[in-house]
Image (cartoon, rainbow over all chains, first blue to last red):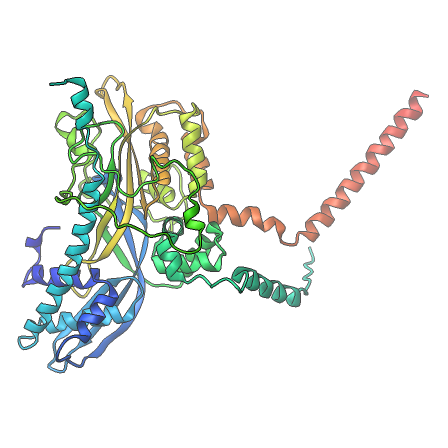
Length: 155
Length: 369
């Protein structure tokens, strides 16, 4: 699905929701607790764990088929000023879903946005660091066929 | 027929379960395993339970393994039972394995595959010698894995994309207006099965069964002469459209293993010679299984490709009806539950037959004399 089909600032929102979902629950809790001021929030919908049916593509690129399910927890919260936020996160950690929803709501509040943005960027950096470490380890296991080529055509 | 219920055994059952608990714990002088330890240190067992349990949740799979005392099919059963207690929020968009953050990718067919041969964390090329330093009193000092100066570049081209322009390899595109894929958890098995139904059944099928089928195929019982086009292991994002948002968001990342097997096809009057592909996709790092699924998937496509069917691996009813280890285990193991009445009935029948047999023998003996 292309980003263009999504309206009203949603590409940005998609990004922060993705960062919040992919954060380790521990990282989000720590970042939340490190906030200088934390808004109070009330549950619009209590955190609930359910399943999302994960689909793949035949041959990697073809029509969809069902691979299996994954656990997902969702929550919806409201800030005192009225902003609402949702959290959908893989796994069964209810606190993770609630805090993701709270940060989503903060991101929509003109007064709280800056603080929330810092938190999101911090989580994004942690994810990027993990991803990059894995990519460097992968690169270190790439086979170098150089020696074999030299044996066939010596200088 | 009258139905007679027999009660009893409650005490025996409850005591048996208490003993089971005690045995599960083992020697109390040895520290108890935590589910976190299982999740982190028995990670391939966790992956297998998630794949066959058809439910991606590392913590639940670790708990199931602990409770099942390491009996993986039993753990799969526990996970399958648990998932039925959860509501389903919906289905994800298809994961895009071309965009995978690849930790391992090898092609046995094509040495110079763009992106290179990336071994990742593999048992391949280990000497399979027991490492007694792991047994020696606690942990061995672990050196961190080396990191290259340049990270692996993503996305990494797939074997299919490399040969796409030449049409040498079968290439799959989404069909316009394709309906919802078959869902085994909501619809009963039906035949002839579509490839969507087959791939779902294989993704949750028993690794041992699928491995043996793939092996039987390789040994000539419905051989597809496969070459391993590509195996990849890594992380993909799962995107889902929550109703209240109306646009897709990533709800997390999962680890998957993907395998493409290539089989040459000499084509037909209407179809140019081309490599056909078998495809395997599993949750977690389940390489042996993904390879087996790819071989079995290709063998099951025999009707579409126009191959003769004379082997078990090519028979979709045989494969799909027997690949699920929860069903198979249930049916085999139900035999140990009381069958007293069956046995009583059969006993009477055999007694009658024996009496008649000996009467006939006596009559023949008499006639002969």
